[in-house]
Length: 71
Image (cartoon, rainbow, N blue to C red; front, side, top):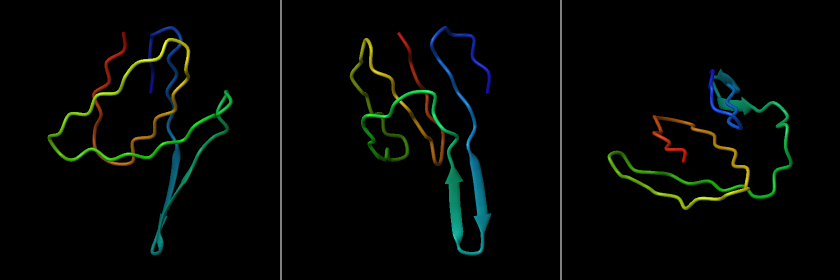
């Protein structure tokens, strides 16, 4: 993935699939992770998150598509 927005980084993760299931291998993030949340959004639903001025967020989309607005 390639972005041209200052301060925004995106990269792909490695997914390993076999007959037992799948494992997702994360590269070491270039920042300290403070909080981890897992959430789901049902098909055709809209979910809004509030904003942060200084917090770094690490999003992993396991399935489907997310439309993200950055302001």
